[in-house]
Length: 220
Image (cartoon, rainbow, N blue to C red; front, side, top):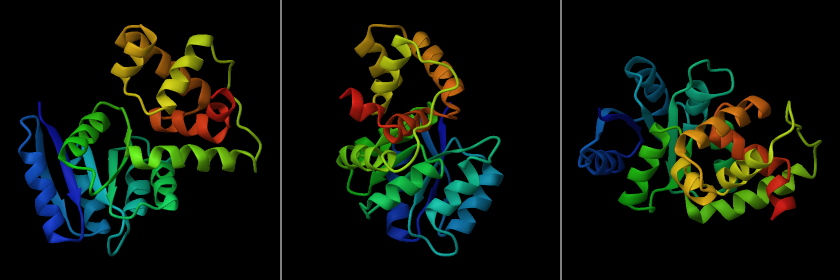
């Protein structure tokens, strides 16, 4: 089964380039192209793609607002959204992930990382451009010092703590399994337990919880 992707970008050349790269992959199919955020939302709701690839700056509705409509906290069945932009700004990254995005890439990331991000999002994983990961950690750690720390519903087990930190480091399920010498199914079980205890809907929210509570910083 191919991964069905919807691309939204207001630049014709960028849309065409992304479409060409992804359609060259044997297991990815571009099923829609949108030139603004409003059109992207309408197409996504109609086509229900496996992954939406959205630019941040678009007319009518920006990528973050479109993402919140399709994948925000109030959405019962959120779509997988990967943000891609030329603007490497912390507020964009934070806003995109808060809105429900499963990945964040810069347009100069290259085809290999783009394809990896699509596969990761489709699998329920997350991929954030390496160039912004360290700054994200710092930003979330700083934010945690200005508000009460959120607490889990139930105490985390030692293994859940290990999975939490590995996910917060940006590792995929396969990488978590290899790092901790456990099976892939065990990783998924721990992730499901973490989501329940933390009130998180996906691994991005698990990682953000670790950052925002200062857990990563405190245990680094």
